[in-house]
Image (cartoon, rainbow, N blue to C red; front, side, top):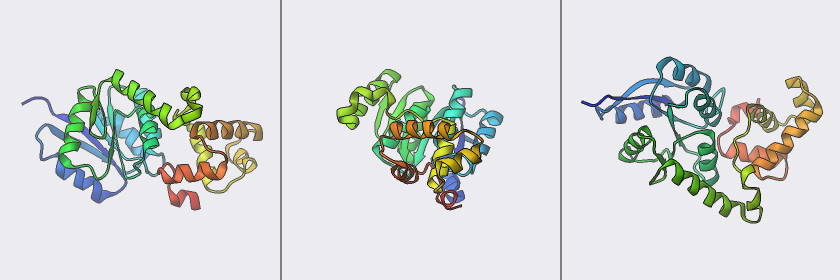
Length: 231
């Protein structure tokens, strides 16, 4: 038998994790080596278990799945990550790919399609929806669709769907809690002007006009958890 694919499941819902494990372990080519319920544990387990593939939710406690993906891929680029999320929209696909994911799947994906996606990314392919692509093909696919979504600002395509930095994501989380720039500066121990500069970058990257729209953007895509926003 060929060597099994080592798989790590990252999702904060235990029933969903168990369902994935039950489905995937029916295939002898898959070995689920671990599970994580939040972003920080996912990073720890990625180092400890060195999986071949990670199934990564977006809406996670501690650190969201896009940030976790970016960190793991930056340090362990041989690990392939599949974003699997209930927050399914066109722009989220680009954020996932730009963060380093090799595939993007909605949570209502069929077991057969999920297995095929796992095998494809393990072979170095990229999968979005039902389309399997090489690296060059996915770059072209992203560029084409960024241009369509950007419309009249397509010339600024390089700034679109660029992942927020860890600091920008941290500031955005405080924005969803209703903190002012001055309050955020105090919390983070940085200058008011530095927060303003980060906010300008956040609004540009997300293509929104103000703080409220930025907060709604993050909440709708599961980047910030509602309980964190209320605290």
